[in-house]
Length: 457
Image 1: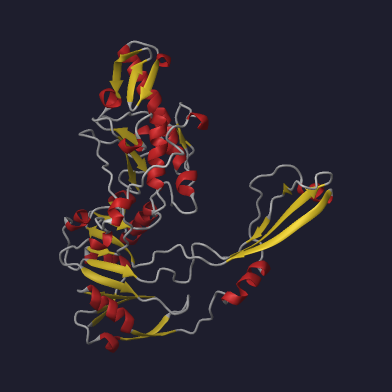
Image 2: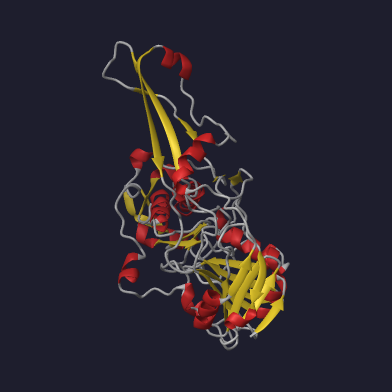
């Protein structure tokens, strides 16, 4: 057993590959469409959002990811709807920084609510462009064409037809779109075409089988935690018992009997590295650390809701305003009020949370189960002192062989985190007060009024 004082950048570079495993299961979509080189990623280019393969299949490049909600199925439906192709012919590539733009995380229902907007617009634009190409080749106006299952045919003369694959398959569109200049959840890209109205939908709104369920049921999925790199080390992070506490002393002797264990220290950070994962697990449990006395920064559960109600308001906004609230309540025949409370819920994995970093002198590759793989990529790039374009971030719906074929430098490492919370939560406890006014003369009707919500982190 040895103790080292080392910064994180040196640790990454010296280790060669850091595997911080997190495994969310799922299938793998093919990103390649043929021999053509994909243009550089930019939200204002149609090719950054979708492509048509030589056989007519469609690849949708989705900058978010799926955590088991079936977001990939919904995105496939949206794209299939606008392109008029069967949903099973749409492959969704998710959260891969080499193939997708940064659309932010997929939590809070933003996967579809916000993430689906650019994909829908791009698919509508692609259909418009494909119809124009068919119009030129078939010699008829675009308004005399109809599309069925990815085949453009002349109305009244179905023998005259061209498939999407014949029109552009295996090549890129090389066309611009407009972009609002934002990255993350609020990113919006639009083309000239307008998406279909809801009453024209045939695919969206239908029940489509999940892509990932069969492999999950039969245990055929590969997880990032299955990746094994030659010479790989295993690591664990040591967290304090109270958020904000700092290590005062570390008893190296408490893990000296575990062969090959290293204690990593960097200011307030303490980690364990070992050649075998079980050794790292045991050492992390047994390492004795003396922590500083720190008062818990969070209220006790019994006092949580009183804390929320007494907390100062740091932001107030009215998302939708219809009419004037105060006059409506003043004239109401009756006012109904109610208070609601809901508890803290952690949006966290039930098992070890991890990622994989293969660090090289000229760049790095990150496999991660993070809800925000692009931002995780940015963090790894910063830690390694590398430009962002030198780090390839991949959301962890990838097969294990991708990691296994990566050559490792001596000292490559897998790190798992058993306790993800660390004094923070993704879904807060909340107390909410709602009000509604019943107007005079309509005693059986209730006119809802915007409610006031106070939330404390």
